[in-house]
Image (cartoon, rainbow over all chains, first blue to last red; front, side, top):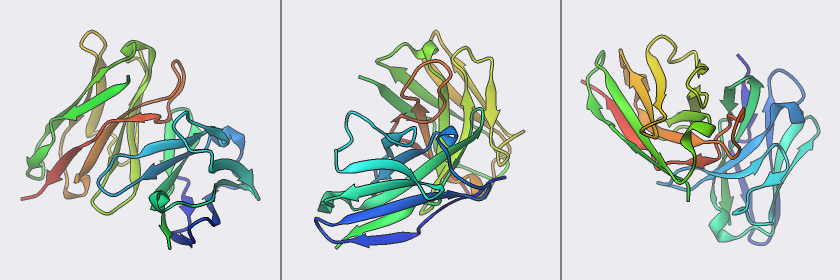
Length: 110
Length: 121
């Protein structure tokens, strides 16, 4: 079974920019993996931020953007706010309805 | 407004069974696949199972295959997860989720608040 890897933790300064990545053990992440990104704050359910690699949901702030970068899926936060401190998870599709989450990135805004 | 309300969690002993429910509202339930995702305490998200809108196609992770069964009642707008032979490692918050698009879309878009299942003697 494939393994999806994310940075365990990252730190960004308020107003700064940070990129989180999502890597697949099977090789290059492509649009065919339909990458999703989720944000989860302590004690809350996850919230979907990005779908199909680059599409923001209607509730997703414009400072979040998704892309495919260097063979990985990427989530870039430009102009970090204190409320962006959270865990971030990616999800990749490998076959049909079978999905694999990444291990998550704990983002600190400090 | 899409609403997903899970119920049925609780404390059970290893080897016992439990059924989770997810009451859906605010959309045409039968038009969407539905998914269960779980999160062990302090750990990441894990996709558990998914079912097509008609209930005719079902997918389960290797970790739960043969023990958990996902099903749905499109008249009651309710999703279920029947969990048998529960193990300590099944302890988690279980989330019900609906995709953003109807039809053959399977990734979670809208999430419920979750229900906690604790397996312990």
